Length: 494
Ligand code: NAD
Image (tube, rainbow, N blue to C red):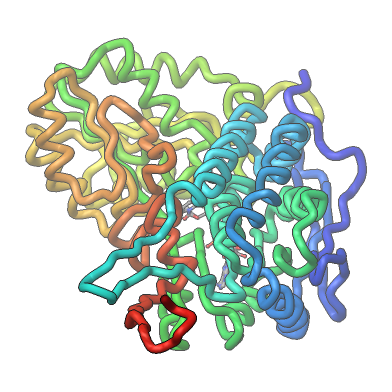
């Protein structure tokens, strides 16, 4: 069985600084292991603060000239980058899948979503033409959008291509020099994106890649020349970076963890609903910030739940569902399942110990779909983000009780309602706190230009990471008021 092609040899990742690929001096290195097999597929440097400073300096030099190019000119580079993405889609999907543990189809979908953000950025020259108004006779006001300078994006492991592409196509097209600090767990895809940015001809230093972990992140956030930081990852880090960045007067938009609820009521569509539920909690092996984590079963929905169990049990690990990122995640999830059981949950479907047949996969981090029934709202399985293919079923008597459970969560990324009744759907759309709401959609990711972003502990800062509000995040809006008086004094005038 072969459902994924791992890189043929170990990839040595380097930083992209000032247009050239470099090993940061003094860096320790980490192995990058494929979640599918546990084999080493790459090595990544952990850039020290001195290496971050070099990258910021090169980016700052590039930003000065890049700022003076026109939006139309900057757009031409992005056209080329997008074409190369399309050309290399299959190879990039294999690479992202092999390091993140995704299926190739999921990795491909993430790349396509990244291309959608490119399309949004490519349309800026038509969408964002600014505003100009004659406010009184001879006096006009104008909005001018100006880049910030050097900006940074710090990204998580679960979408090695898509999450960086939530940020850099927009930030760079708006005239900033962008430094990407990808997750040290998935650095290979970031390097491949960097290669394509170089091939697209971006001037040296406009796009940089700096690998590393906490030290590199702390150095970026502390650097006085980094004006804005986009972050996507866990809430603990998001909250910390937001505070650190704001303390230094920077702009920070930090997206965090999630605990997404699906509300299923008795009139839910019996065909659509079970498949949407299964896809939502098992897709990406549950390692999506939009994955279903809690199913709020309102009243008697037994036949729907039985169908969820039946369909989830049929999923084939490997081609149908990928692997967990690392051994630590697998241990954490197995412990959480055991704890839920000890607290009184009933395991309807147990994914522990499952793995695909055959030798190459025995070293992978596998957990099959797991369904826990009878979970109470106060239990860990109902409250904490588990980030794996585990769905906790919480029984509630009414829709209001379901909304109360959803809204008690400190997170607020996504929530969905499954119903055939428009009034019920509207009650949930209006009543939930989550930033992204689905009606009969299990993974309610808005398509661009509708923007992506949650609320509560799932987002620190204002606005969304994509869509119209991202323009305000990555730029400064200058307001110009002009007054011209008609001159009549010169003889050459008349
Ligand atoms: P993570 O927080 O461990 O890592 C994210 C980034 O922060 C990485 O680049 C990492 O190197 C860096 N980092 C890790 N620890 C740090 C520290 N102590 N100080 C400074 N930097 C640090 O997250 P992850 O495990 O890579 O990703 C999974 C998490 O991301 C989940 O919680 C998931 O819900 C969340 N996520 C959220 C969204 C969203 O849109 N809200 C999208 C994707 C993932």
